[in-house]
Image (cartoon, one colour):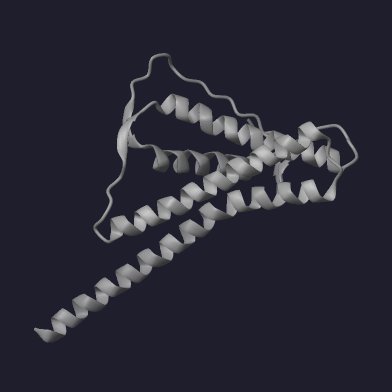
Length: 178
């Protein structure tokens, strides 16, 4: 009987180790995008002489991405509490269509600020630029039906999910993708 309990305990430990490894991989992926945006835009600000409106746009995107990163840290703390039997998801009525628009607007701002910074850093060279380090310009188009019902969801988790989808769409779409 003791041997069977030990085998079960070892199997449970292996499962926990696998879950921990998947969580670390996921967190690393989620944190890399806003950190890359912040670092890339800060580099543009330092490397080139930007005019005031472009500089302000870049700083606004840096601020938004820093806030997004902070939300992810809070989400990690929440996940830690949840795994310890603590805090449940913060579900509430949510206008998903409005949240999609908000997330798309943020990604547009990130891409536009990166393109403006890249054009300024290149001496004002025209044409389509890079939305952020290594990411070509993309066009986001949102189509939705009128009068969609609210959903019952955790806003922070859905925001994270939408951000990941949009980031991956940019990352894995061809140049100029829509």
